[in-house]
Length: 184
Image 1 (cartoon, rainbow, N blue to C red):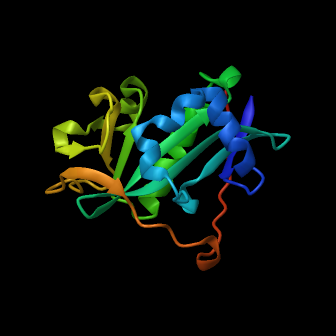
Image 2: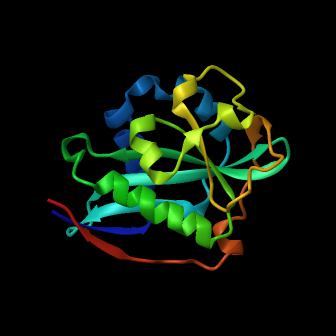
Image 3: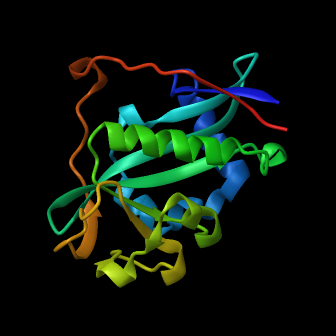
């Protein structure tokens, strides 16, 4: 199967919530990380879609602004791939592509709450070992962090809070990068 990673398109937005429901279930919005994202728009430069040759949405990844005791950071997630297509490398390609984009955009710290066996190969480590806390319940092994810039976590510790709202799309020039991937 061939797919392309593109900046999230306007036509993807109404398809993402149903994709998340199919992937994670309807109870997903009760999780702590959803409270950090409430009433905020995701960072537009870090929202990507995996699309099929016909343009159909196969997967999505978004990032959100957060702060760690006043230090800006980003929150990865949700990452979702159509359940019937999971395990074919689409999600991993989205994570790699988006982390590269986050580094290129100058982001320094990235937090994720997810399966450690999935995210550790990308360089995520237990966040609690760095003195980070979430403002709600979380399974400690699922709460992870990555320095996108070496040494970015030095002296940074505390409770993760909501970040500042990103600039609106009209305030920033649009960036479109296409990456073609093939998976078996």
